Image (cartoon, rainbow, N blue to C red):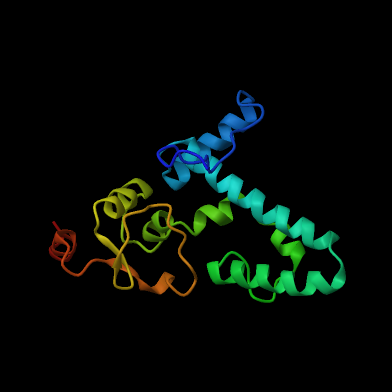
Length: 168
């Protein structure tokens, strides 16, 4: 069963961790999206790898099974806002890690202008100043669906809202 205090890893680290080009690209992504460490980036890469693996399996599947499973995969990815509803498996295979990172709550708070930097967005989320709908979400890596994107805002009773309105 496994020890509940020791959860399973949700990422896989790079096979060649000291390649210069890989280090530079990882560092650029960590800085651009305000990630805490490379482990968060590796989680996004692992999630992308899982999605792409599903798409490759569906391409090799028999036509009867493929049509059903393909529609399920595309519907779930379009609900997340990663691809349009009219996408194909080729569009799923062309996803990048940036597409995954763009759907994080931290990035959406920053892109909506609620925070000046991605690091400030992360702090606002962790401190409980951001709501998605009526729920306070304190997880910066929360994947925001396309329906929830318009519901992301600063909490109504947040002290930050008063500071922003007064301009101090």
